[in-house]
Figure 1: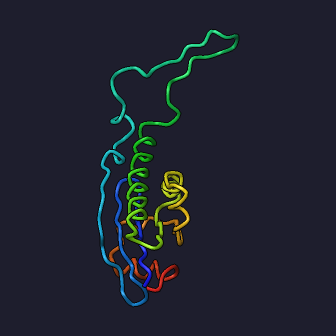
Figure 2 (figure 1 turned 90 degrees about the vertical axis):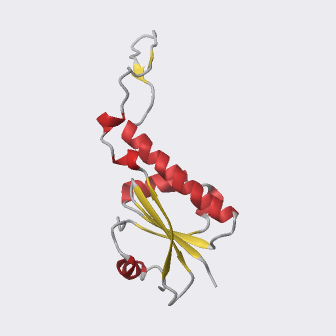
Length: 148
């Protein structure tokens, strides 16, 4: 019997489910919240100025340290935390394969955060935000990917 983990998430909320095979339904495993991802960018910025790297080369301009906004950094942090949970589940052989369900932008962050051995166990992805769906709705949505 194949054990499949299903991660349903968006940028601030995630739910893990276990699927044991056709006709077995979905078993809720865990739920995570990342409230910092829900804050507005202005609420995430400190009062202090950003670090500036100064260059005196011809035509050079000062640049702020960091390439992503505080909001983006929070989303990336949450994606890394979820990817870590998937990695630990793989290492502990808690599942055989997994399915990612997330809106496209967050799905991209999740994929970037996954390590190569975990990626190899990815069964499918669904580019939708189903975090508010109940179990019956999830079974319906996942029926295209899994026999639930």
